[in-house]
Image 1 (tube, rainbow, N blue to C red):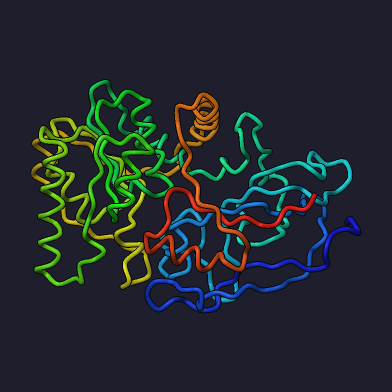
Image 2: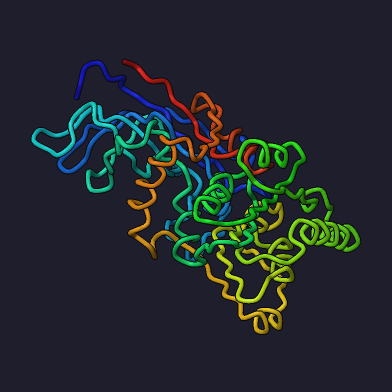
Length: 359
């Protein structure tokens, strides 16, 4: 191991299962010894790691049937990261200085199996673009719904990591009209002015206190906004929220509408429960008479999407056809707060924590 490396690094650990939505008090930033890479492993100094909503479920004690295991108290968090190999066994495929992506974020240094590292594709103009969630949006729109010329597309949670790219992707695939939803007027304005949405609807579901009257009023207000934005209905839904927005979207569906579900933030970001359930009421009769399809999307079911997405994303970025909204949070100490702020809807686009880069 290089003598220039420190003896220790820091990582974010879960201190206790949150009671309600996670706060910084539920985590610790812990100093740990740097391990030396053995056969088949490399030591990576992380440059950026992703802050993503799925962590709410993983730390909330409610992770069931998920592709990755839940996180227990005392364990380090994890997630997509971009980093530089700083130590590697002799004769291996990766050498110091190589940039890679892997799933051991939320720490300054990660000991990663070589088989679980992916070399950064130089086609992307900035390595941090590898941390976009655009592959989920692209995969859902190309593999589940298709987007046809003239389609009206609705994207829920359009100011998040998936949604901020989904509307732009839908347009590039041929959509005639793209509508997004978000929780604040400021974000709604940015969706239209910066990301090319034709209309952006503001939802009042976070503000409602859960009483029956307030929830009904919020649902009616949202349904009215959707009817005004898409008076003839919608053809495609890219849904990241579930909940009452999905209910309203079903009611607004045109004949043959195709719905792709890529997230369930209405349940994950609810104060009650552990973020592992997202019940929703939909009109099954309308699903039948409209001949609708409604499918859930996970990347593990479509392993070919990532490479295809990276190629198209690189081309669109370099040609100026797409924007990558990115919020950069400096320093691992601020990572727990960044998660809390993202869950509270205070961030726009993809959120990454940036770590100091030396050399």
